[in-house]
Each structure stands twice: as C-alpha cells, then as structure tokens.
Amino acid sequence: MNKTISVLFATTIFTAPVLADQLRVVVDIPPVHGIVEGVLGSNASITTLISRGIDPHNYTMKPSHAAALSEADLIVLIGESLTPSLAEKLPSLASNAQIIELAKVSNVHLIAYEDAHEDHEDDAHHDDDHHDDHADEKEQNEHEHDEHHDDEHDSHDHSGINPHMWLDIDNADVWAHAIAKSASELSTALTSDINANLAAFEQTLIGLKSEMQTLTAKPYSVSHDAFGYLEESFGIDHPQAVTNGMGLRPSPSDMANLRAQIEATPPACMIIDPNDHTALAYALAEEYSIKTVEFSQLGEIVEGENAYLILMQGAVTAFKTCFQ
Image 1 (cartoon, helix red, strand yellow):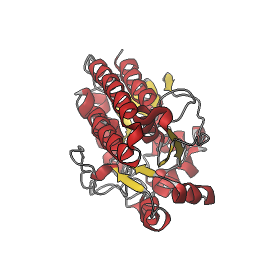
Image 2 (cartoon, one colour):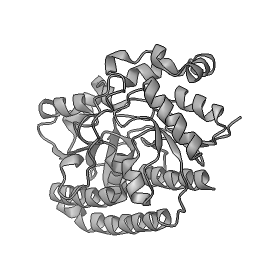
Image 3 (spheres, rainbow, N blue to C red):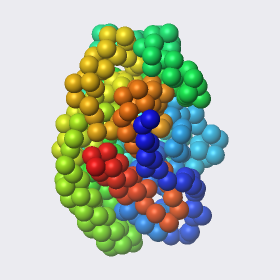
C-alpha cells in the first residue's frame, strides 16, 4: 500500500479591519496575498477572493466581493488565464482602483501549454467509462467523493498560457517590484516603509531559491501536468503526468503509455495536488506502490504567516520528501 504524506496547512481566509492610513487591496488567490503582504505589510488591508478548494477558473463572485472591489485602492490578480470571470467584471466594478494584472507585468516569465495530445478526451467526454479499467475500478470504490470535484475541473480551458506562474520565484520578485511601485504612487508617505519591506521580502526569496537548488532530483510523477514553473525553478526534469497540462483525463492509449513509463522508470513518488483530479492518481499510486506526497499549488492563508512563503516552503518540503 502506498504511503501518503501531506504538505498542507489549516486555512483561514480573512479580511483585516482597515485602519485610516492603510491601502485597501483586493487579490485573487492566497499566493498573491502573500506577495502583497510581503511588500506592503501592515500598510495594507488585504481581501482575498478565492481560498483553497475553490476552482479559480470557475470562480463565482459574491456580493461582498463586488463591494470590496468597488472600494479598493489597488487590485492585484493573475489575470484572465486563471480567473476569466473576474477579469471580465473588473472594468465595471473597480473603475477607481489601480489594477495590476500580473500576467501582463513586464519581464514576467510565462510558459505556454502544449497542444492537447490528440488521444486525450475532449472536455465534453470526461466520463469515467473512458478510464483504464483497473484504475477506474479503484476510483469508483475508493475515491467516489472526488468525482464531483473532478467534474468541476472538466470545464477548464487550459489552452494558451499556463496560469500557475506564481510558482516561479523570479516572477514573485518581478511582481513585488510592480506592487511596490503602484502602492507608492497611491501613497507616497508609505514609500520608505514599502521599500524596506520589499528588500526584506527579496532576501527571503533568495533564500528559498537557494534551498531549491540543493535538491537532488529523482524520477517522479504528478497528478496534473501543471508544475512547469516549479520544475524550472528547481532545475529538475519534466515528470510523468497522469493528466496533461489542460487537465484532460488520459485516453486508454495515454494510460498504456503512462504505465509503460512507470514500469520502465519507477518514480520516487507521485506529487498530488488535492485540488485537482486525484482519484485516478491515487489508484495508480496504490497499484504500483508509489509513495504519494500532497502539495496544494494554490496555497492558503494562515493568520500571522505569509501565504506565499508558506506555499513555496511547502513546495521545497514536498520535493525533498519525494526525493528522500
């Protein structure tokens, strides 16, 4: 039986009370919250719209979110590739705010998704009937609770740019400078404090990147081929993946190829994002006695901690655990 190691933390999504001299900032996801917090610190009251367990691609705006956006001084989000519905509504809801769409910031590093393998199923045909029979039986018997969650992900359009760009530490550094610039323009009185925070945040990023570079990689698998930015940051090879970058379930021929890869090069572990398709990944891991390590690339907010630094330290821990 495979051993599962979870690299997760308790979730607390909150909006801090606004003080008179604070900037009102709204962000889309916890990693962006962490980067903003690292730069602005106590100079900002940050509202985060999407917590772990909520699919950013299918994000539905609440009235409280619309109110926060309309009152914001600064809005920071990945952009249309991650939250298309949010990006579409911003112009009408936040006409008075500065908006930073991180995917469009100068010098950001972007990775394009490869075209879907022709044998992968179309989004409209993500039925369990097309799964490999052996893994499908395990999925039905042991992971039925994942089916509804998986179906929610089937509508993703993962063509174009890989939106998980926060997993690149160099991108976080580029964004931190853009956030500092915009915030200083909004309140020049905060510039000195913001610059000090920025310098400290950059030093922490340098430390994380150095720790990543000490990893000694081994062959591994992932539940979803969405870790491209992390792979580049770690300097490790592309892994075996259960589902491709567009989140499509594998066809029978893809499953046969994946099994052949696993049998030819047994992976040290399988890294599974609990927010993605997990049932088939766990079934394969159990079948081949592969150690599993859970890592949520969306991250979360823990009061008193920096969400981005927790996320990236969790990534380091996950890969170290995998390669042990």
